[in-house]
Amino acid sequence: MVLFVTGICEKSCFYCPLSDVRKGKDVIFADEVPVKNDLEIILECRAIDAEGTGITGGDPLIKARRTLKYVKLLKKEFGREHHIHLYTNGMHAERDLLKKLKDAGLDEIRFHPDRKFWDRIAVAKEVGIYTGAELPAIPGEEGKVKAFIEYLVKVKADFLNLNQLEFAPENALQLIQRGYSLEEGDMSAVKGSEETALSIIKWAVGEGIPLPIHYCPSSVKDAIQTKKRLLRRANNARRPYEEILEDGLVGKVLMRIHSCDPREVRRKLHENAGIPLYAIGVSEDGRFLELHRNFLGLAKKAFKDADFEYIQSYPTFSREKFAGYPC
Image 1: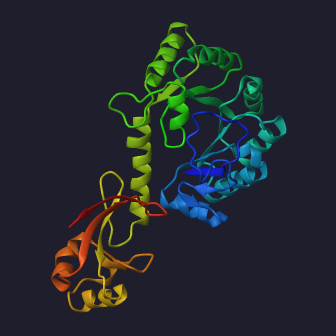
Image 2 (image 1 turned 120 degrees about the vertical axis):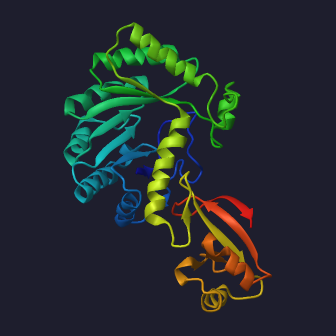
């Protein structure tokens, strides 16, 4: 699970992909679920069968008390084996707080620091937290990353993760203004980012650097990480009239009747067409019916003037629509 503790951050990274809903705002999300109480965090963890949690932001350490509370909550609810890692820019990663995080049960910390906060990585290691760094692979910044790697080796850090730099609606203008463009044939990857990451890894191997360096392309995040999370959530949170699709989306038929109360139509579909009640739902706004695709034929016969659309949605809290097709 991704636990977004706050959108507040004192850095201004030009490639930040946070949306206006989160960026600079003190809001909390468990994956896509807006959090108002601790129970919603636990329920989201259970909904996706989470084996661990990544705590992120903004910078979670700006809200240290809140972050410590959530580490303790997750460990208490799901046990020591529930792995918790945390992302921070290091500004607030002082020894006392790092020690409290360790004592609360934090398993791993990933730094993305400016040069003046590199020393916080050494402190985290001294405290006893499994410690590494995570950076975007920015074309043209190989030299900076190599210098950082040499420091990580010096303080015996545990790893470095390099992520493919990505375009998002929120950072596209900033990237374009700096001369970056899309990789040919890709929807989000920045041209040259993968070559940058692989060049750094090749250099590290050639230099005999012992630090484990991992590279994560955007395609892996989308096709594997996100897909697996959606599939787990769909298995646990799908409604009886939704079917799970292979990409982790859920599908259902949306039935529009312009002159009748949907609840009355639901009753008639059950009593007259024999469609089980579990296979028919009323949309959250109360305007439409939602039903399983297996009963589309019966519904069409019963209400010839109705409009039908097959909807694919994310199995998330908001059931955000992905696509719709007339049927």
